[in-house]
Image (cartoon, rainbow, N blue to C red; front, side, top):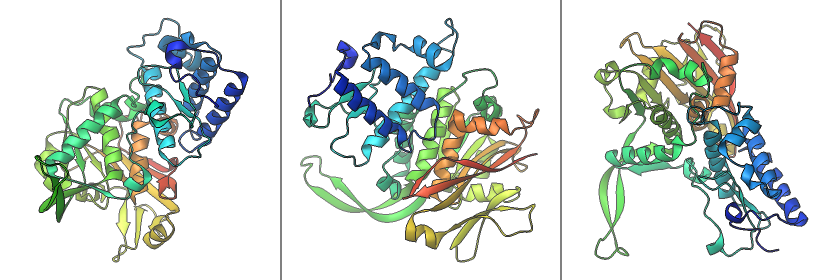
Length: 409
């Protein structure tokens, strides 16, 4: 079979019936994956643009038309103030890239949504590699990379995060309507005058680093070095949250937990990512109703409920985790005014790594925050809040976050 118009966005040819059927079958495989199956908005959007492209109606795939047809916006809505089409497309590009990053059968057609366009491209798998467009790079790393720490010098960690933020901004949804779920949770923090501190766990490691010779890049020198390690799963959350700050025009700074002190916390609102690898998260949540705990051997880690005399139910057994890589993980999301500093504090942390990932996703995805909005009592928008999340980990990869418990005070 020949390639179906690798530049459909430019020429908009109408494919044959056989090609249409093949693309539609591939679309259903894509939408059945974990990257799309838990969402209603993304499959609806992707089905719409694919179907119209297959029907030769690429001229309909414009931002305003998509806003009206898919999201029910009025014909005169302000696309600059309401970026739901752009943000949805950016998130779909990321998820498509993640899907094709995994090993796939040779028979699978590649569906892509080029940056800056809403007209999908379709490419057959037997096309020479040089002829296939490279899909947008995903914000998240691969499953294999997620299991390994990211090593870099302290200043390089910040640089990598900031570069990644640029890729994340387009995937963030912000201020689609008055009193949106984003505004309900993030409004008190984003409305403050002080810049926000983002605090991520880091660990100093003494190791070796391979550096290439500038005169002869094929030659490497292995040198002793003092490295800072950042877990990629924590990076996942901090990049999404930093992108939200950037998209809303909020000034922020990034520091490792080892270099963060009480004076930093007194300067303005703070966001903390990670639990058992972030001393500040453990200190700040210790007095809350929902907080982290563990046995002395740290073979069992959990989120405890101080209002209950029963044993913790949100527990991760590390032996099971390491043996099977299939287990139930838990995350804690919180927003509260810290009694010591008097400043607003946000927590995104997991019992294990998957819990931290879903905590970050929950705070930066409108569909998840909408679930919190549904259980928020009237008049509780600016109150302190804690949310316990649960997620099923399969093959080391977290699924959809599910709200286990919510507490306002």
